[in-house]
Length: 102
Image (cartoon, rainbow, N blue to C red; front, side, top):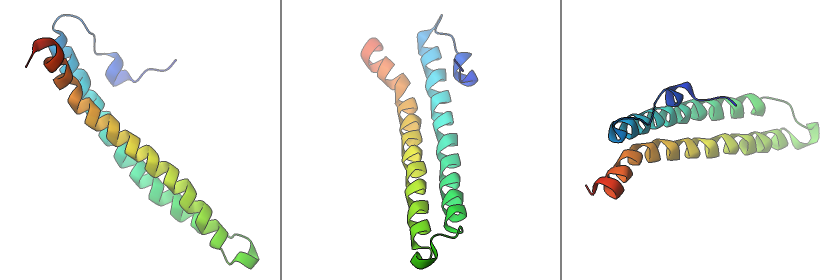
């Protein structure tokens, strides 16, 4: 099983608060990077697929519709990456709230 190296190096030993803070910050950064990458990929994939020729009698409408459907999947993944980013930001705060009472 592959690991995300940035997260795998963080050890939950010693000060858990610091470890959870580091983990949350790395999660936030990974989510931000994925969100950006998927946004670019959605636009590029849609444009590339839409340029293909579809059935001649549909004048390319079928290809454009399929391109939009594929791009929607990438945009949905982008929303999930945004969720990773925002929950990574909240991770340390949840630890502080529930275990440190702050």
